[in-house]
Length: 188
Image (cartoon, rainbow, N blue to C red; front, side, top):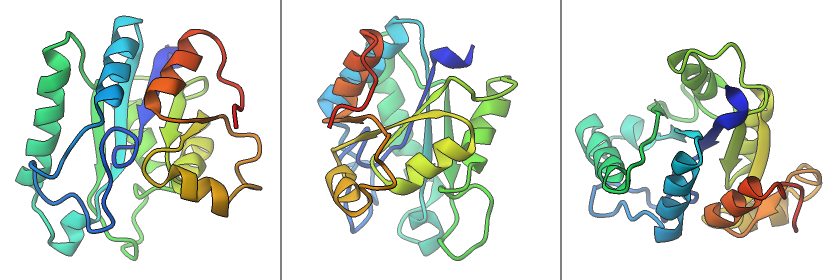
């Protein structure tokens, strides 16, 4: 049921972002309130998935095993609280590789749709901190929301017109609170 699916960008939404890339499991630092928010969604009957561009793989900044260690650490934190990400979709390509999976293209979201056995993503949410997250969500037929964490505030400043109808929340926890209480309209 797609209205019970929330797809999250990773860097800046779930964890602290870095313009120098997150290159090791030690550098991967989830926001405590984001972990709480994912747990809350799972306990409310939502499936939660992650769609993340990771061009650091193509650039040689880290390898697939390091990326998997980051995600394993996150899944373990969630599992300790009875939650889990239903699927993690990763684009390993660089910006100039011409792939179909790199956001703003909807390929990662389509991977999530196929993996979860859904016919469409209509009714699902895509939550991100960048315009490309919003564009990917729109292209896949999702409802979209922006968070101010990570690059969110900067995104809002530079793309206010393109985001005029997009609900904006301080962080993932604020989005989840709004979603679970039926207040997911624009809040900025």
